[in-house]
Length: 135
Ligand SMILES: Nc1ncnc2c1ncn2[C@@H]1O[C@H](COP(=O)(O)OP(=O)(O)OP(=O)(O)O)[C@@H](O)[C@H]1O
Ligand SMILES: [Mg+2]
Image 1: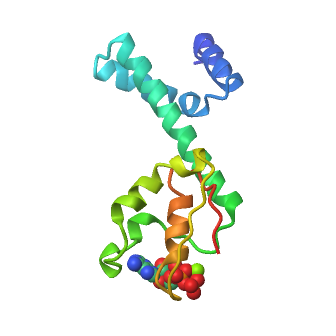
Image 2 (image 1 turned 180 degrees about the horizontal axis):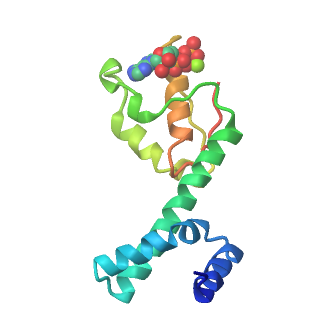
């Protein structure tokens, strides 16, 4: 049966481009009822899911636009193979502060040691949003 209120809410969500909430509305309402969520907790759940979905979409699109030559992530990088590499520095670069400060990163080393892998991993990390260039 058509529920005019649900239709109105779905239409508002579409207009506001809150598409994850629109598509998951039934499930979210059921979850709220099942867990007896407070109004605040429900709002928190809805907005957190929507924000996470938008962040993940932005990263995916950034990776697509960046045209990285291969798919690599920092999670696949074996730091044990490069003991001279400062893991803490890489984790710091992952935060994206260098982009905010308009700084460059130079990865120097012999062929095949993972420079491109690291550059792609840094560029594709969620906080950097695939904005780094690599070769
Ligand atoms: N420490 C590592 N952990 C996991 N994979 C690695 C590591 N080092 C290299 N690789 C893998 O080896 C391959 C070659 O690495 P990559 O292309 O990043 O090297 P490069 O330093 O950029 O080489 P080049 O100087 O020729 O451009 C890639 O598939 C990469 O994922
Ligand atoms: Mg390379």
